[in-house]
Image (cartoon, rainbow, N blue to C red; front, side, top):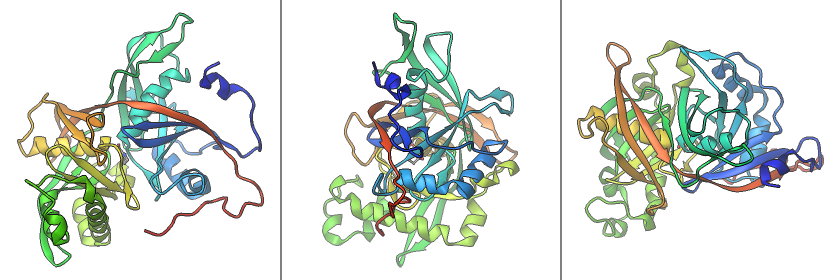
Length: 376
Ligand SMILES: O=C(O)[C@H]1NCC[C@@H]1O
């Protein structure tokens, strides 16, 4: 019996247990919730996202916060989806959650879900080989491509040795070379959208803000991971400063689609050098993966700057920084989103692995039912 079959067997301890398949994508966790959510009301995915925010946030806290989770935990809630979005029909929908709330896009979770949705047999596919799954995310439909094989018992299995790939929603540069005062210095960065809004800043802009002793450890503006705590802290401070500026948000963090105003928030900051894409998002959560939506945003930005041509693949690493920790990214299509905005579709690829199956228990007399987070 494999663990998906085990999931069907009854090992409930209490009614409000939550069942989870645990995966990681380049080290970044995704808790895929397979049982424990009541019906999520709403017609559109953005309505459903609002519904969980307003009515079911206690569940996010149980799943993400300590003692059942941790500050850097991440979750995906699958939702049956029969809505049409433009011309395309979604096979399934997903809401993403983290230590601060609900994001609008998450590439690392999509890569994990690609495998999971094949292996779990939740969706039925008649073909094998490359299977396309249309996953509806709050930012739009994300076509996801999984290499599969058909087993002798007829079941479809995702190939763990092949990258899962997805096509981003239209991604674009918002502003290049924005200059602000930060910790008594002028710094410059770019802003881009890849399903969520990011500040994208080169490590060389942050170097002068590091203690002198740490500056000596940097060579050629490359990120040295021994000191990542300092740079991630700076990234968190920068996000916070910009989020707190009404003018900044009103000027830069506006999606052109009026129906997508729920997307208008600054999700995080990405620190870059040639290969690193270090993303600090939500409440100073540190992405262990190179960040799929961040790669979409960065690739769109590089294309807008004329650094990256159509169809050229780049590879990005995360804070963990080893060779098995890469996402690929390439522009596969350029499109005019509005009169002013030239956008691109970015193909992002990476691998995800299973790490476990969990049953979370919430006892009646546990005063930590909704968990806690230690302050930053
Ligand atoms: O891969 C991504 O897009 C995500 N990883 C954590 C933060 C982002 O949502």
